[in-house]
Amino acid sequence: MEMMIEDILESLVEQGGSDVHIQAGAPLYFRVSGKLGPQPQFGEMLTAQDAQRLIFSMLNNQQRKDLEMNWELDSSYGVKGLARFRLNVYKERGAYAACMRALSSKIPNFDMLGLPDIVREMTHRPRGLVLVTGQTGSGKTTTMAAMLDLINRTRAEHILTVEDPIEYVFPNIKSLFHQRARGEDTKSFGNALKGALRQDPDIILVGEMRDLETIALAISAAETGHLVFGTLHTNSAAGTLDRLLDVFPPIQQPQIRAQLSQSLLAVFSQCLCPKKNPKPGEYGRVMVQEIMVVTPAIANLMREGKTGMVYSAIQTGMKLGMQTMEQALAGYVRSGTISFEAAMGKASKPDELQRLLGGAAAAK
Image (cartoon, rainbow, N blue to C red; front, side, top):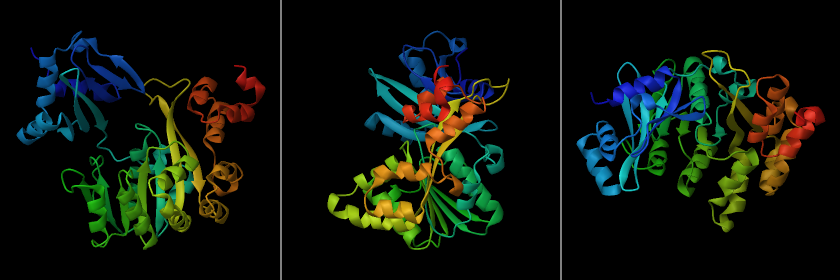
């Protein structure tokens, strides 16, 4: 009997997995609690025909035409009663391959995620720019969804999101949501943001801030009285500031630094770190955040282009809810939640982590 994509996805969800990889000449691979492993129960090896059949079973006629023309495709796929999945299809070694990510239908609860109070505080701000950053798969979308859900339950606002794809579908509770997917509802993030400013939003979520136009429009929206949430693929607060500036020509950078110093509220840079001894059935990773809140001192560093001094400002801002990634990792090591080795693997400044934990931890 032929394997069906629904059986594969059901198995992924049952195992608590996040991703499935389909490749010709290899077995299916699942990522569970951050670890990638083969799934021989579905066969030792997929042929090119098997891979294409599974992938094409999730596509409509137009998507198949687009894939055959462009050799890659971004889309989403839903299994009723199970979950929705983000789908990326591409060609490798002449055959079709795909990666699918499970998108939870259950909107994450702010309190259950254990997010710091300073993150909650940002959901009460009337205007400004809040950035959640980190590598792919670091939980950025989950954090932002929890923040929007909190706003939805406590404030009457018009919330407009631009995503690729839509991962969590929000019901209208106290707030009114309009959610737009790039490629389905709008041609680009830039187009959607231009239109957004004429659609009476109070809060705007930008799923990806990668290009000059999108970043400029997001900063402008924050300056003109909107609360804007956005994501970047950066691993630190200082790195986020540099990335935002680097997309602009040098002649524009002083102006952008000045705008950011006035509109940026906070940067939350996060990663997922494996737990030391997860309990049976428990999620095997913990989210660790570097937190930068834009104080007058940090705003001044931004205006003057002194992003290299931002790390020191975060180190000394713990009373204001700030913490460096190394301070956050050290706290989890001390509590026994994560191992010293796992923390070192996530630290951008391993020497600083060793200093925080002292020689005893470093010797383990």
